Length: 113
Image (cartoon, rainbow, N blue to C red; front, side, top):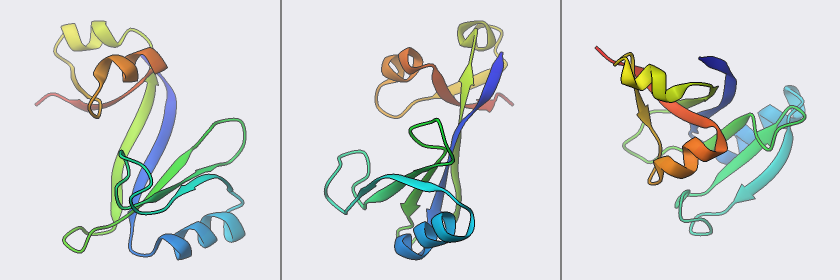
């Protein structure tokens, strides 16, 4: 069952402006900023921000020229993920390493049609 939202990831048109909005206006704290080419999972860079307690509540990812800014994904902390999957209620998407995602206790999911 769903326990809580893990984080949201947003595609943004300007990373520095988006970080400024989240920190100066919304009160988030920067956990880590990656420049382009610095992290394999974020080849175009990105910023992790939190509102307290978590490593990150928000991930800001620079949108590529062919992408529209907006929601990239939502990650959830779940309990009993295997039961949801086995009943064919959801599909679980974990980038590159589903075992690692499950071990960390969260997964990106969508309802099966």
